[in-house]
Length: 260
Length: 260
Image 1 (cartoon, rainbow over the protein chains, first blue to last red):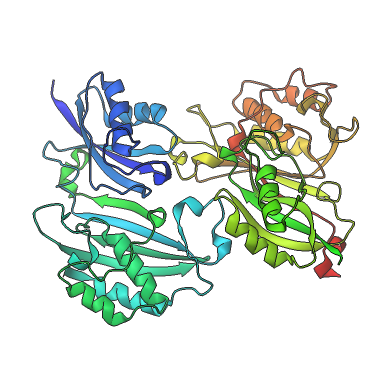
Image 2: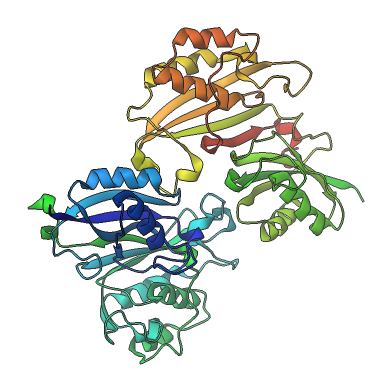
């Protein structure tokens, strides 16, 4: 009986997780998913994520791949998982994929959202888990943020905005940014950024530095310099994990069996 | 130096609280507020709530009263509290009130919202803490719910929908319902209900019974009978606390010093 390659679209509130990746003795999203799948499948199931989100980072559309026996149709595994998963993890959708599908290597784009809560009125307990509460009385200057976002579009080497020695494959620090924009509404400043790939801590380093520039504590020239820097010696501290959400992972349409 | 009567408008995520009211050895909203105010004021401060929400019930607009020394202006105490309160409690606003203000006895109306998550698509980890996930494949019949809501308008004796022996004052079980309506959108069924007062567990008993009628497991006649019942022997189990939020408490305008 052939197996099925399943893509799970996963939502999680990252607050109470030590990130995505399995680690001994800590609660991780991959660990919770694998333990639940093991129980359902009656044997060990490996789950591969499109990206390894850090501790405290959320997802509204993380993608995960698993190979399952044929009787697990996408809808059946989705329902079974949702009945057993804890309340802070949720399978939004499940798709059957071509056998060549790999959750990480097949992904062509990832999209993240970063939310800054501006006025303290936006820090309500209903939103607080999913934003970075801006501590200052004056909001970051949106014109500076917009300028930085414009600089990021296109292909750059992001050594200045990555944790050292953690490029996901070889020593390649090049990323192509397809979309990058800040919006401001309802007391929130929100960054949407989409790229072919991201380096470790890259979005949080970018946001941390952009907010310092927006607050007038660093110059636009610093940003330009960091985009050409050979290391991250001059980057600002990463913005807090709570503001970051992995929104969407894109795969080529031909990998979805339903599209064939 | 005269004291100030302050109304605090309080939001909380009730998930990790054993309700509003102070109890030894457990985490309650009133307990957290009093402990924080004690620290700020340098002495014991009593906080009175407009209503005692149960364990797990949320608030987007609970009202609380406290008497504070004159140097605590409303804005000053609001900021100081928000700097020290844990992340699941938040002071949205603070108002200076007339000396005769009493958070519970001066309130003329309370408004609650109850949210049922219908399709399992609405149970995302971002909303899950604040709704009751409807377990069945078929949504409750909205026409039945609307009919029940219509029956509730006006003045009734709610012995059929209250915990026995817990009427807040004397043995009075009469409440006047000013507004009561169900709406359905985006996979959610939402009840909004406003009354001069509510009895213990009343909203959750009402919702539990309405949902049973909506699911076709009880009749409309049962609802009529419960509205005239001398006790709660025939009521359905209360709906889960997670779906309930205290939205707003109304006081007469003349009690707000800013309005004078």
